[in-house]
Length: 89
Image (cartoon, rainbow, N blue to C red; front, top):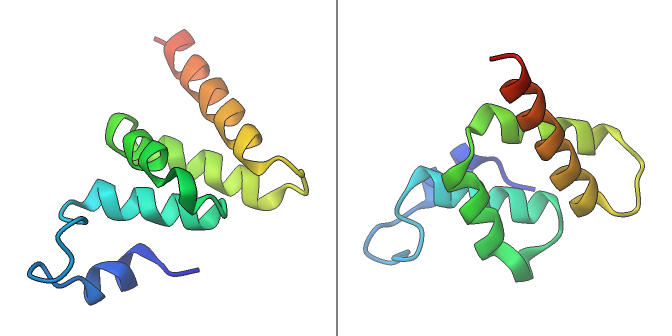
């Protein structure tokens, strides 16, 4: 898997017209980490609408697990983190 920094270093604005924002690159990174490139639009939307710190917490949780359904686990953990954040306010 490639890091976001490597993706952005290789980014050429005249050639790569589809990735022009940081959240798009992070969404593509998430889709590659989850082996779900087919649904990359969903991952870009998640990266756009959620704080990056929340997504990184959920991603690290999924990387440490041995679950079969990593996408479901990621979405569940993201929802749990958001609920914890809302309950502390």
